[in-house]
Length: 451
Image (cartoon, rainbow, N blue to C red; front, side, top):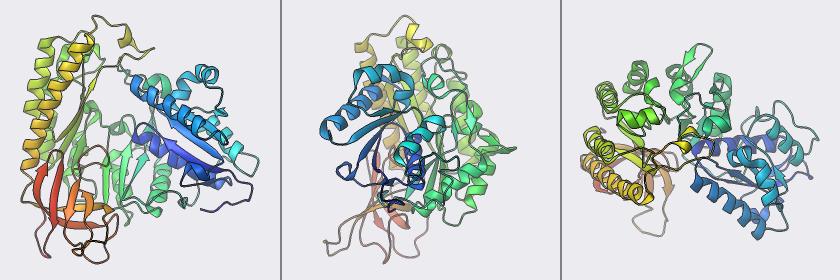
């Protein structure tokens, strides 16, 4: 997108953290473009560098601070601005510690975004409708097969380990109109898959419409090929949602439920409901309702008070649950959270050893699940094309319905693609091998059956 005014700032945005931050950066980019600024493809082309930070856990805070310091050191002739969760949480300390930064703005949206748009735009004032534009993508925004669409923010669950409620505030849903508008912008930019994200997407409701209704509304756009929902808290997953995923349609059979642990004593200390038995019952219902469902989860080890018996309970649970994908994390005490004061603390050496043991089991379980895919023929959405230098034609990289962008594995597609295939198109691929979390497949002969 060209400058709407010769005086518009040239902005490069560096995004850290989760997909929700990526959705925020894209929304901010459209707001800036509407106000007269332009997004550029590289920091060297920019007059202003925006670092969208993450402040969730210690490692993400350190990464965000490092990115800010790197930007100020590498580009002393440009104005560096910091936004996002880290700024919302530690604005005063950051101002004092990194005076090289030209401006500090908190969460995307609201007054801070208005101030930032006013600063970088050309019309002299932030507009209340900025971001409610046609959805034309900035030229600097690369074409991608997928896009994240944020449908909610904030959280009411108050898990004792989580800083999000203190940063984001209470849970609130975006309206259907806002979501459809954001989705339309993503589709105009070339996305074929919409990935719905939020702090607890299963709770989404607006105007009497629930998540299933939102999925139906989004599916009505012919440009949507796949629709995926991430961050479903287990206590809010309804039979209606499972049934919607089980129907043939654009909502893919993919269940992302961060369970965190299986032992009830640990879960109560985490401020969470449920236990391993209730989670297994939920997974059983899901697998009965949704043929071929793929399940992803996440777990924390080393939480204060976790004993070896608690951990062995978790190992037995993940073996029985048979997750297709799962992530393990070592507990990180975050200041201001109730868990930071809990005792006894698990020694770092013990937490690291449990982390390694859990990861080994998760990989074993996933590899067994993935081996069952070998020999099947599946739909694969192309994420990237290879080079044309090989006479056999370009190879490609894509994903099955059961692979979310960036967090799950990919499918390496070998062989000549059908003529005219581009990023975002769906091709039929026969899976020949499973390698870790990835697959290798060949383009299927025309007329091959899909599974």
